[in-house]
Image 1 (cartoon, rainbow, N blue to C red):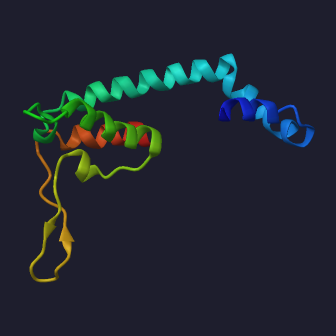
Image 2: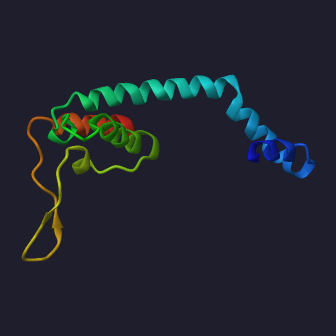
Image 3: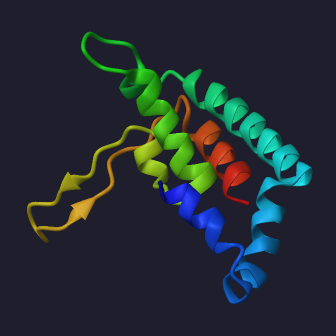
Length: 123
């Protein structure tokens, strides 16, 4: 298998000398503690985002609202790729004069919460 090949390649001096320190760093106890901490931060932010009354995140038939909410928080927290309007569930609006996309109206109920959550997670 591929994993067996990769582990065997670590025995070759030019490959193993550069890969082994990174392998030990990823499999060490400090990395596991950091991953547990990161999972707790993501879980807390997911719970905070999911509790906001965004219509896009509400349960409805044939739609997994939990995976949708989690994918948004994963994009924000892990990948750093997010759009605040997308987090609010606001779809862009086509401007008929300039034929460009304008952002929709922000929600007065949870806009500030989304701003604080994105500020906390993106920094």
